[in-house]
Amino acid sequence: AQQVFYDGASAVASGTDRGVSLEPKHSQDAGERGHAHRHADAERRVRDHRLPKRRRRLLLVVRRRRTERRRRHGVFCRRRRRRGWRLSDRLTIILCTSPVKTNPSTALIEEVHGSMRHFAPCLADCPVIVSCDGYKVREKPKYRSGQVTREGGDAYEEFLKRLAKLNLGQIVRCEEREGFGFALKNALRHVRTPYVLVVQHDRNFVRPADVEAVVRCLEANAETVKYVMLPTTTCLHYARLVLSKYRLRIEATRPEGFDFGLMPLLQWYDSTHVCSTRHYRDFVYRGDLVKRGGFVEDKLGQYQLADIRANGLDAHAKYAQFVLDDGVDAPMVSHLDGHDALSFRKFSFIRRDFDAPGDDGARANGDAR
Image (cartoon, rainbow, N blue to C red; front, side, top):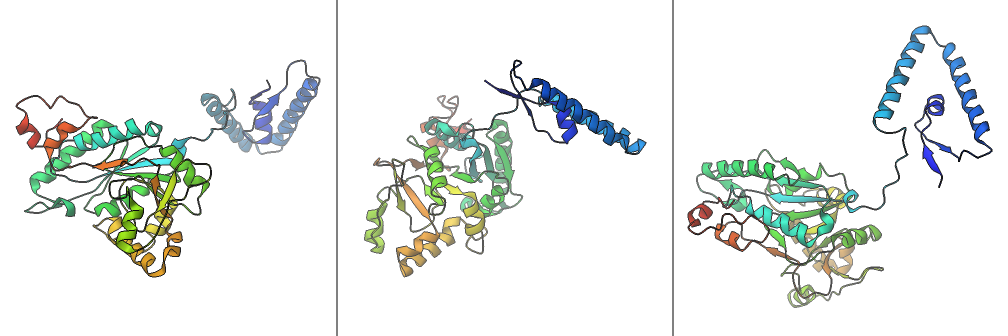
């Protein structure tokens, strides 16, 4: 098979980093190519001779450094092959966390991360961004609003230190309380892939999820599908719920080339979902549809629901949000209680060394690890 190598003389003569294809030794054009290379070197020497002396010296130094850099990075060896389709080039995982009562324990986020890797092994090589919201110090804790006591703030700071040691991914922290919506917006600034998988720290996977197929579906239907939510208990029989509650008939459609269906969503859900990064930046955060200190679903979800109820299902096209319907009558994502340390005993993807008898006091204090 023909191989492609980098040829230093021709690259220096042309000023590019392109390779030169070398035929087998018995090729009849080998002599002609050698003559062309010598001719190019001669032209370069004539061209350099016309330059001022200081300019020629500087050009020589630049060429030497360029040659050393290319040799150091292996450019003089085989040209790198093009990368094929890889999920890690298309999808970034955003794992969102905030203060909870069980801090400084990392058991909750470990369980979610472990279940995700277990039931969706295709995500093993995808980049991970851990979005950490800030907090407000108050006399009485109110965790949903990001309010903690001074002791709770210290516990959250210790949690962040333990989280860094887990090496789950890149940690992006908010300096102050922003709420889920704006903390996610802050994390999106660090995303370099066209799609994101948004996972909350209390939403664990409970059965296999083919996230790669979902991303491929989003790519193949980029104009009509922007968001796909993984089914939860709430959306398991979504068509029946919509008919009884809003008197609207919806049905799942099967994208061409895929073995699952997509059911239209009438409102935004912050639960585990795959979404287009551009849809987040250009649609979700385009105006005042997300309120600082709250969730995305708080305002955008209600706005979308009111729009569709007023204008019919034709208004759903601009939202392009769906829930996955893979034919399994069971949720794919469940909810964990992050404020009850005793529930950690039921976790399956964390270390079990805290389950020793008589350790109830340590678990109640959040030291589940």
